[in-house]
Image (spheres, helix red, strand yellow):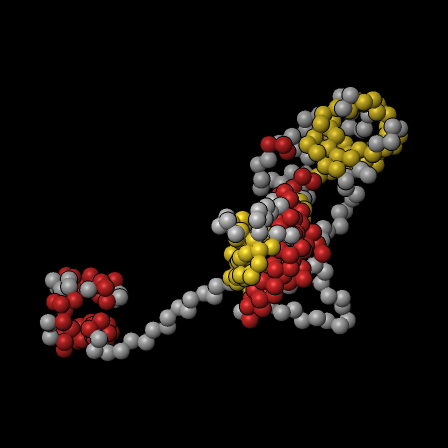
Length: 317
């Protein structure tokens, strides 16, 4: 009786009465069952036996985004292959536009006359359906194809699609630029899309935790908030230097170089985030100084009062 899609309590009660099969339930007088378990049990039983209709909403098969092209004569020049790919893109993008989707991953299959096939995969930084933007991104992959004695069939398929709605253009503002997304895709074709990364801000007063590195293709740029004090252009793990006292040393050695302090601005005290147990901050608060050296280096030094020591953690432009 569990196949009737009844509530768990009803199934347990029926099985407790010895009614474990639908056939047993059908042979039982209906009136007592309806009084005890309600009309829902009878409706499910009649639907299972075909006595009462049941409305269903069948799932439509998802659209398939694939087009193909057969050529009367084999082609082998890169320009000809790109032209044929452009024809396929026009048809594929029209189909995606009708369904409000854009391609995220495209696969171009080139069938040679000797029955050998070569695939060119293109991963896009953003869902697209603009043939004029997508076609140039195929150039590198198509240029590496060995056409052999010629290519006579092409197939283009959108392996992964995502929703892509039409954009409302504001005449008072310029349209959004897509050059960055195209650049990410071009670089991603060479080194892998997941290896193209960007910095995003994080709400933290700890310098090394104030940003996170994420793949650019799966994120959007966000503006960094203005820092209360200038921050170095280059940030690296703290490097100890030999110095004593709470003020920047007049001279010190860093990376086998002798440095002479011309002026120092600070201190800027930064406290650790007490709710996080960071081993690098167990020494307590840090007093940061901006140090200009005679050698031309502008360094970011800090001093730890609780566990006396000096470190270099960054360099300004």
